[in-house]
Structures are given as C-alpha cells and as structure tokens.
Image 1 (tube, helix red, strand yellow):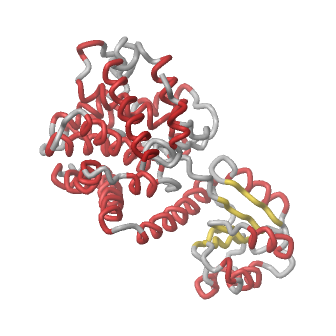
Image 2 (cartoon, rainbow, N blue to C red):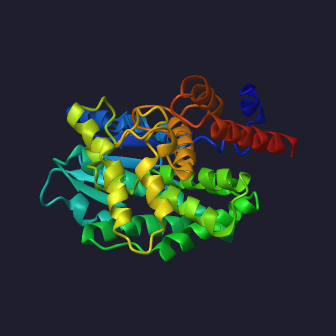
Image 3 (tube, rainbow, N blue to C red):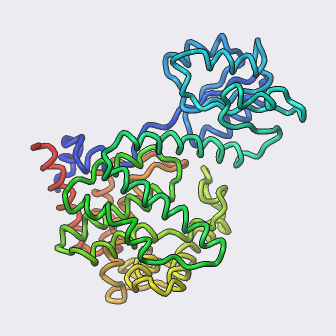
Length: 387
C-alpha cells in the first residue's frame, strides 16, 4: 500500500490539512528573577516553544526576528522594570500585536494599576498556579487564532465559529445540568457538512490548526473526517448531519476532566487514566439525557473506543455488537488522535498513521471500512496533487 504518496501530495486535503501539525506557538518571557524565570519556562515548555530573557535589551533582537504570540513580562524585568519594558515593547511596530501578560508579586503593583493603559492583555498575581498561567496564555492564543478566521470566506468562517460557539455552550449546559437541543448541534454542523459535500472543507481543517482548545480541535477534525467518510460512502442529508453531530459531541465527557489531567505532559497515573477513560460513559450519559438527540449520536459517543476483538472500552463490545456508525467513528477517532498535536507528543504524519492503522490495528478496526477510509484519503491527495 502506497502511503508515501500522501507526503508527495503535500498541500492536499490529506497532506498538510489532515494533520494538526501547526508549528508550536512561541511564548517569550522577560523576568529579572532567575528562579521565577526558570519556573515559568519549565511550566510552559510542554505546550509551547519558549524563549526566556532577563533583560529587554537582550530580548529585543530575538523578538524582532521572530515575534512571539504571547509575552510574559514580570515587574522585575531588567533594566527598566515591568512598566517601562512594556511601554517600550508597545512602541515597537513589529511587536504591537503581541499579547502581553504582566506578572507581579506586589499587592499594590503600579504595573497592574496601569496595565490597561499600557496595553496589557492580562495580569497574573504571583504566586500563580501553573494551570492558571497556561489557561491565560491558551485563551490569548485562541483569541489570535479566532481573529484570523475573519480573513476566511464567510462560509468557512461560519462553519468554524458556529461549531465553536455551540461546543463551548455545551460546557455551560453541562454545568447547569441542562440538555442540549439536537437542532442547535445540527445547525452548527450544517456549514461543515455543506463544505464537505462541495469538497471545499480544507480551510476548515486549516482553521483549527494552532487553536489551543484541544477538545474542540479534535472534535472538529473528527466531525470533518466523519462527514467526509460518510459522504464517500453515499450518505446524504440528515444522515451526514447526524455523523457530523456525533463527531462534534463524541468527547464532550472530557469537558469535566480537570485540565491538569487532560493536558498532562507526562505519563498518567492509574487513577488519572481511569478518569480519562471515564469520558466515554460521561459523554454517552449526557447525550442519552438529551431527549431530542438521535440514537446514532449517542452510539458514536458510547462506542468509539470499542474494538472488534473485544479489547476496547468501556463495555468490551466485539464483532457484530459494534454499530456501523461507531465503527466509522473508531477509525476516524484513531486517525485524528494519531495526527493531533498533544502536549505529550508531536503530530504523526498522516501516511505513518494510516500505515500503523493498517498494519497493527487489523483486529481492532473494521478492515473493510478502514480500506475505504484509506482509499478516500489517497484519492483526495491525488486530486489535490493533480489540481
């Protein structure tokens, strides 16, 4: 089987676009206190590329050569202090768009009282938790990525923003114990399905690259590839909308998993792994409680981690016990997970992911459907290369 063609196709639907391989965001730190600078750098290095500096004068040549997306400036920044350092940064044309986070351990910090005037995007009081720092930077990263969607065509922009708004809104509904209406999810997925049917979905996959909300990115990619898969198999209309909705909602149980577990750079403990696996039951239980949700959406959520040989979870289903929608979702979920960037691993090249799925997962995945999925991706790459 010729997977190498996928690499040669390069910019095709299954070249660059099939992988979430956006370059890691650069975050810079200017902090005059060596110990704190080291702590901040270590806290960020699993998620971002990090450049740390003690002195603005040392930092400027590097920052001008490659402006970071976000910049953490401490009160102790040398040689001018935090306020003057930020003022000077804001006066540099190449750095005007950089998101700046001011940090200080002083309760009555003048840096904080003038932060808005200086053009800071956020402030953090020391000592702050690692999760607080990462969450703040992540929000700024996402704001920048989403602002970039304005440069897309109206249709692609609508597909990304409507899905994101619905996805984020579900988190609030879960917190309040309220059900999501299928019509809302269906409407959010409709632009995506239309784009797939027109073979005009690449800008959507590119649009989520670099976004820092992993659950949203993964769910959008699964929804896109499931729609593409279903379309290639001849599904239309409401059936495609159900597939896409199932992709968007299949992992919503992860919304209740603590950030430090969901985004842990290192190996999970047994207890943490149990929490992660629990997202399947949580997803299925929530969807089941939504009276307007089609059964198929719940099946995708409940069975996408099951395996044909019975070694999957949560129920160890095997063979004919696995629904066909879930078999499709399992293939797409594995492909997306392998080609996703995570804090603990780089994204795998699409051709390598497909080779592993074909060579090593024959007992786990529906081989006939997998063959169809691989042929679909190869065909898409060939069309892009020819175009």
